[in-house]
Length: 186
Picture 1 (cartoon, rainbow, N blue to C red):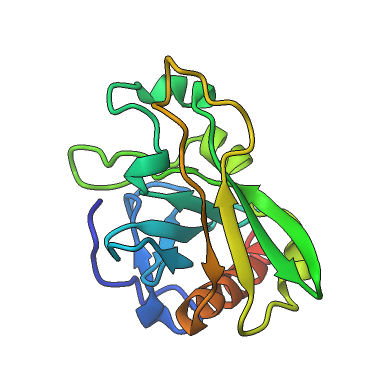
Picture 2: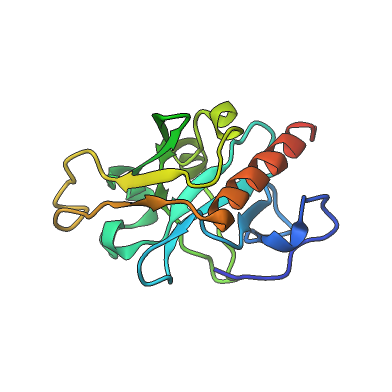
């Protein structure tokens, strides 16, 4: 995935925290927060939040965690067969199902990510109003709750749990602000 400087012509809150990862000449434009919601133990992978400038497209959560990804030979058009993990947060003492977290799509020859309608629909955050109340020390869990199809996913995938740090909660709050801004875009 190409990581380039943010597009400062767009009024993004704290623009230095966002990377334009889709082709700037094509719509929708897709931005990714520089900080993951959380990192795995190695610190090289985790769950990231994406926002599209397409009206009505909620922020998306996608991951690059190899241990829970599909087999490497699974073509993009069969991603719907991949059993993706669910992401939950405890907000106000209640576990809230935030959404399903699919793998970050591969970049094209130019290094840009093309987020398909499938990813936009299935990786979109649910319960956006609840996330407005997210605070520090928010517990999370990322877990595959269905039986994985052996033809599309190896073994018994592990789960990840912990506490969101300041960078993770900031990424969510900024994504919601950016989403609200794009809702006003015709």
